[in-house]
Amino acid sequence: GILHALGIESKEIADEKITATTSWDGLPATQSRLRRPGGSWSAGQNDMRQWIQVQLDQKTTITAVATQGREGSGSQWVTAFTIDTSEDCVTFTPYGREIGEVPTPIWSNPLIEFDGKNHIPLPVSAVNHDTLMFAAWVLWRGGNTWQRIVDFGVDVNRYVMFTPSSWEGKTRLEVKLQEGNIQRVEAQGLPANVWVHLAFSLDGTRGKIYRDGEVIADQPLTLRASQVTGESNWLGKSQYHADPLFNGRLEEVGIWNTIVNLKDVLKQGKKFRGNIDSNGIVRNELRPTVEAMCVRLRPKSWVNHISLRWELYGYLGPCIPCEIVVDNGACCM
Image (cartoon, rainbow, N blue to C red; front, top):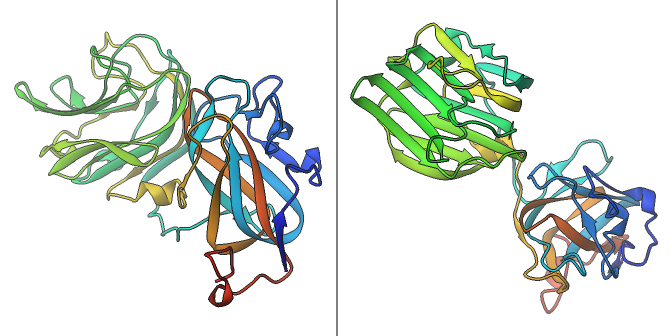
């Protein structure tokens, strides 16, 4: 087969074959072509749920991907990303990682909208466990401190609570068994109006807060959720009546009585290095190569705003076996 650029830059791939989750005004997915002057694709939102996709005319052996930032923007580029591939453009698989089996949550909800006036009760069976893990996509709309993502227990003296913003502006996980027996873990505060995957775990030894699949705070925490279990269990409401109700949106909420691998929950694959400036081109080889008709690039970190131009490379037809490739060129494995 012949190794070559697959047509994003050259416009062999038509505009309608390049799509994205969201786009900023005037910077649609069709402006993502590598070396395109005066722009790029820029996501309409800066969060880890964004992706840009290209659909090829036939199943193709993908060997590499190249990226650039946004020209003329000053400083906008993607610094790390993952790739999903699909042979039918329906079912996508993260590149570079076998996704493990995720245990079924003991309680889940696909979508909950909060307007600062409502809350959702949780059954005792969802939280009365020695080991507990909570995870959700969170869009917090900001507002006063001490709103609760989740709060469960008996009253103001026995509870587990998780807030996007304490007095100090920190994300806080706190367990209180009685007055004077409080243990907590704190992390960087949650940004307003940005989708973030947020989670915490309690196992009787440590308390952890996770953001976008990574541990961002980890402290000794010996109190267990089962020690404070009662009938006052809510999403969006505090044990303290003076605290404001949550204003935002939760999606893909899950509660487990075991510690799950959030990379499996988020279906995260291999992370590729991205750019260090707006115009430099960074090329990443896919070894092993992968056959696909659709390829999605998912930005994982960025400077100032999610903006990029890109190109895919591959073989039309059988590719060269790795054992006969020289100079570390692209090959099949």
